[in-house]
Image (cartoon, rainbow, N blue to C red; front, side):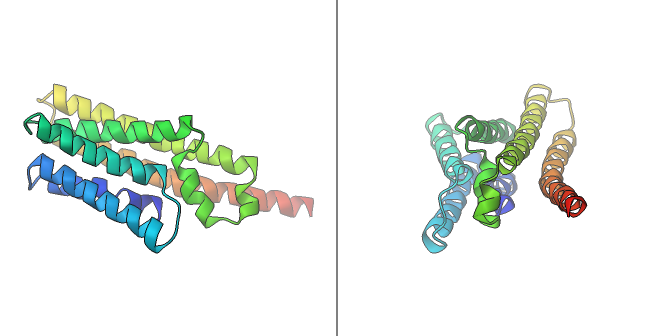
Length: 189
């Protein structure tokens, strides 16, 4: 599964949280995350990824917590918790020396490429860019929660810009490296 598909539970939650109680949106997000995890691990026989497992735990745990605390959380408060949880998942993946992009990238390249130190450094950089994007989203959520006078559209635009920027960088940077390596190889040869 690609990185972007791994974010489907977050998209489902974002859409449903406007139409359903936040607890229901959280549990549906958890179900989508679990379904994707099972699809990848059981049907496609791929390894369970930190992002996938973390997403199941995040949505399921938040759903239970909100339910047990009376379900009085606003959509913005839950968004803040979800985005902060996503930021922490990405940060933990780097701390345990398994940047979350690495698990996806290994499935797309030959083993000899994945074994190179540059490959690991590139994935730390890519994961760091995603962490920065999620941190920006958390900051936007904090503004929306604690400064209710700020139009909601500001938070939405910041969130979209952060995600689009991370997606763009994730596709641009590896391609740039490939071109540079090909040019260096041609100059040597």
